[in-house]
Length: 569
Ligand code: DGJ
Image 1 (spheres, rainbow, N blue to C red):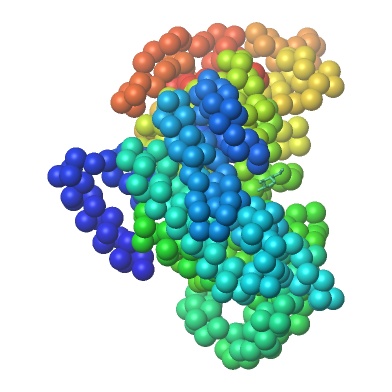
Image 2: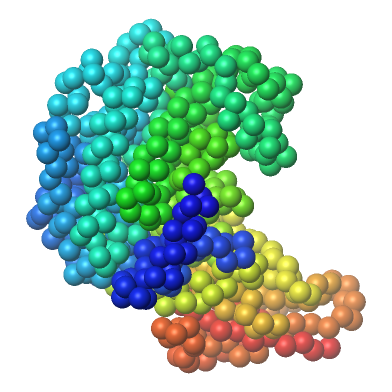
């Protein structure tokens, strides 16, 4: 299937200039990064996802989209509601979809539609009433105690047929009206997963649970044995990497086996949806997952969704899906994002809790993980003031798109992300030690010590050439040292002017070895032009670099700095 997709994409690329049409969005590789190509150029999603009910009326769409433009978004993630798309069986209404596309175009936004179909946060609340009522034809999932749930059964062919028919109609409609390719990706379903129990106990599900594990899955696991997710590796290993047997025989008798079984069902279901979609309108497709945080067990979180520990099951079951995407609402941002940036999975965050940290979080994922994009949830509730952190952050990131996309996947960028607990990160590049910290580690900012909350700081650092860096973000301070250099006096002991804060205390000697030292040359605030070249804004020196000791971007400001280093002995 993937080969066919590649062939169709190449054919389209060759023929589209002849037809005079814009090419469809697609994903491509640059080094280790996966880039989303939109209108022929690599694109970063500076996004936001609408609250669940905010695209259900013309009035809301008209009110919200201009605000999103003012906030500096380039993409909006919008639900496509099955119950409103197909209010009576077989009769489709795409007026809201058309409204979203036209409003997006008027406000220079791209759109990612989220198919709120058979499942939304596990439940089937967005299925139309005619579907809900006909539970004999469209059966539910059951708990172990045989309680029917408001969750359609993924084992029912009728459920699939009805869901897929409506979804295919949506894709056909998009293909026919969206000649500008405003719609750049589609998410299939929303946070699929079982709740209350780790798997469906309907009759059909029980039958399959006690039947042999799919050979396709077992041969995939065998082929990819060395690179399986550690949890899968361990679980299957404990059973002696069995190649035959029921789900419990192959994976053991516990809730996580129930979850694997269920994930296989969901993945296969989604794969069929994805295949239909691709045959109609071939744009990138993804699925999203609610995280399994806070020590919850399968059944206590939406189990069997596209979670990191189930990536092998999902990749094998749904190869037509381009990536699995995390929805991030809990603590542990740095940890969660790392789990979803894998050689076979690019990072895209369709939902993250709306907060003042979103701007620096976006810098971090683009710098550290070559992310495709990040989208705070319920974005319409955010501020559109030019002083709001997200607005300032997105404005700088928008400038940086040609630069970031040029260097993605080449191993020359890092992301930085700091809070009060994680204040420091040390990077190594060439013969340099790069010490990066939260801005409030500078002792002379009163907010650092007066009990004020530390706003999250972060950014990206890009190695342009030897001794040449681009540093961007907010709330960070960076020092450069030659490896082996051991600075005699550190900033903690000095006032902002560079004088020792208090007299009488002799300066610490740290065993100088006589190596060469890294010096800071010009530090310029710059703007990035549309073609990716830089233009000078101002020179930062003196107090603004602690008299040449460090580079910094204060909390509350977002800027892009161009830095040259030199060496002296
Ligand atoms: C994650 C879901 O995907 C969203 O649709 C929404 O329900 C948020 N949780 C939280 O409200």
